[in-house]
Image (cartoon, rainbow, N blue to C red; front, side, top):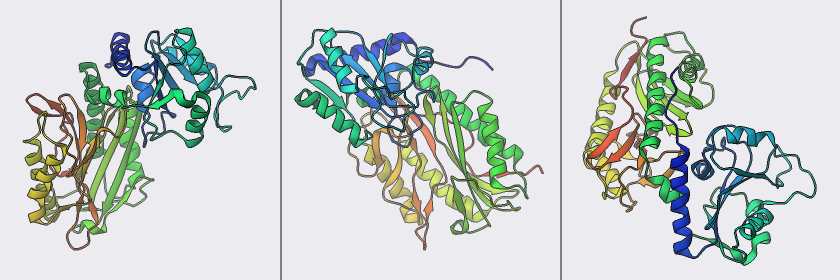
Length: 406
């Protein structure tokens, strides 16, 4: 297996310089960016990943990057000393300090007398001759209440909520970041291809998922999971979707769908594909045609400056008259170092303009006619270029036929 794309130390230093410029403009002494354990990926875990380069599953405790306006960044973690040996393999930050864990369940030493996050942050300001200056705090949406309360108690009025400069920077991807995302998309495609080759009637869903995930993990994915859905043709309302092990036994002619959750070097791919077992289904093909043409109509309008909501409106205007309405207006979410990040929400009402080099997954969520049940047959990760959208996944977007050669 060849060495894949990575994020260089020099790129991370550029990120630090941009944060320092923000601190100078805002009159702040330092920025404090928190992330929970990397495996808490349904929430935001990517700020520390972005500022430190430590974006893998070795990061299993609460962490903070303290970025002084004048001085070098410091990585704080409430864990065990061995964790910094792991962090130094991927992070250019030289100053790493262990602090007291708030959660007694954390994988930490819990030694009395250790300094906490707030006390260590004040020490960093003192070391950099920034005593008394305000400390900007970004993104408390995924911060546990006890953690925030401890920061507030320790930092008092110095702690200021500020615009999330880290989220803003993360929204615009660099060439190295895009290379990581393209590799994640290649791995996602690989799992879907393994599905086509391994699927057969009589196999249970979790057996097929195991084949898909094996194909991807052996190529170096940080994380790989596929959900599976299946049910008898021709009515999608009878399909069962499972993130848990899908124990249904496939039958010839079944309706099927799968969705990828792939992480490579910290960066996500999340693709959706739909099809059948053994032979096509005309009714499903028609639903997928409406979906695909709706996506294509929206893709044709995507360029920098277009409002997020316009994408959803194009999809609704195309699919709605044909019987598929958006369910709650949702058409996807931003994607990068987190499963969901800027631009969010990706729906038919968000008036935020799309930025060049932003990335998101477009997977319109439809309500089936008569029942209103959820139908998500197609999803692709999109990179917004000056010339329009680049779709990172290459696996066919038309309905697949799995197990056709059996």
